Image (tube, rainbow, N blue to C red; front, side, top):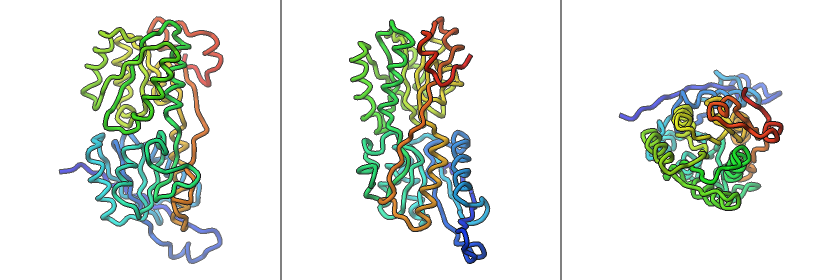
Length: 324
């Protein structure tokens, strides 16, 4: 039996000055395709609900959300997306490249909003940002640029680094875009870049052992949904083996040495604006994809101390936040 969790969220679409909308609102149905689990995405789901309130919806009135979760099993996404299509929802909300591609392949008619995606154009989610020209729109943050920045920060923090690793999830198409960019940056920085396949949590410890054997000096991590869900375990395994980690902002409190990333909660809130516009009659093809503009660099002085590293003063001064 497939594991499902249905979340019912009611939000009133109240049009200012429209009495009929207040007394007899239409009930809209929104299907949510979750790549991971309800518990791991709770804060982002709440951010989306907050966004609904910002645009005038009252949870409990006129939006019914069916949330269905793949529980980190990407091969289930096409079936779950097709299920939402059969339910004839008004909009499908999802996130990440695998979830959005599954929804896009399941329907060309139902509007699709992605809360965020690492590279909407590069991954083939939309044809261009100003006019998506399909039934898909949402937020993007150009992950390739972020991954390059993380490697650059790792080199700045540890000038002697000559060999770095990157975790790769082969069933996430976005790695085909980010890895070439990261390799080019590694060549420029005189760093040997070694990719290690890690499809699920069972692979984390074996690949860490392989990294130690290969004398890797640092690890760069992409924000794949499975990696984000298991970020504490990944960082703990790396720290135990004296491997400095550079990744997205979520990894900072877990003990990563360096994090540089986009504001996911902000993007999830903004996804509600896309939903609102579509429910009011706008077509996804005419709604420009929003490119994230807020990024944060966090350095973890505690992690540096545990790794026996002294962070250069210049990188500490430029950080948006330092965890002491």
